[in-house]
Amino acid sequence: MLHMRTLKLKLLFALASEQDFLRVGEGYKYKPYEYLYLRLAEFEQGSVRDAAVRLASEGAVDKITRDNKVYFRLTGAGRERLLKQIPVYRGQRKAWDRTWRLVIVEGVGDKLRRLQRQLKSLGYKRVSRGVYVTPLAVSEQTKQLFLKKEWLNKAQVIESRKLIVGDDLQLARQLWQLDQTAAGYAEFVRVAERLLKLARRNIVLLRQSKGGFKEVFDRYYWLLKTDPGLPKKLLLPDWQAGKAQELFLRLVELTKTAGI
Image 1 (tube, rainbow, N blue to C red):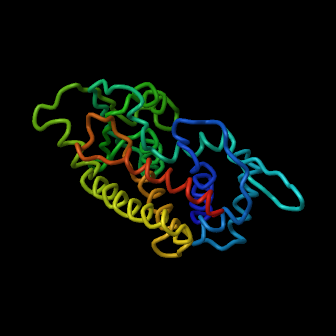
Image 2 (spheres, helix red, strand yellow):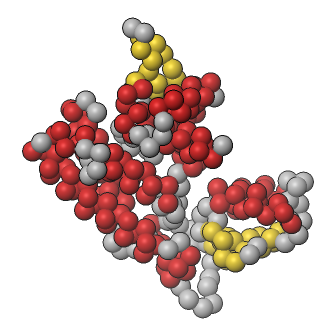
Image 3 (cartoon, helix red, strand yellow):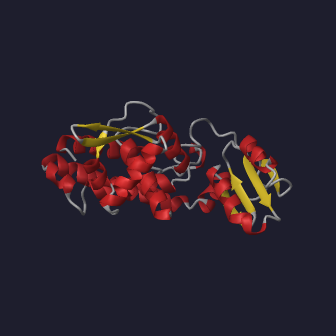
């Protein structure tokens, strides 16, 4: 089940990755199975076909047949589904209100993991057992979550604009391990710039199993999955997410030329 869930999400990313899908919702192109096989090469081709068909039945992708060949395209519903699972930029769409939301949970028993998943989807980070925090403006969503019968009277929710000890940047840096993610972006930029330079001389290099576009594709997907999606004011000065995206999209354009 987990294998298929992972495959379906990465398949949606593959269909979305030819443009800045975080900001653009239209203009997706139909792609054949061969396009998906390369980007999802770690999965069996039969599993890729199964995932694509399932996503089509769920309305996340559109499926057509031309000249006895099947093609798939991301739908608006598929894009929204993808964005819910990739947190990058969710805290950067507007200025931070400098407010922290703190949730203290008790009495949920063996349902804690399920509740944690829901809090994580809202952008909360676990501080310790039963304690979660986020700088994102999700107070109303948090309120509605704990008004549900299942979680009613199971939590205290606090908003605060002031830390008595420490500072906002240090708190974000420690909880979300920002140094690690920043290093990941820096390494991606190094690898992508190298491949871009080489591919301009010999575009065939994009097809390499190691060091080619597939490696860059996987690295970028993982970075988007692990990016905490914090407001810009809480990110490190050397945060290279924008540069990484620019390089990735430039390499994507080269893959079109190479027919990959």
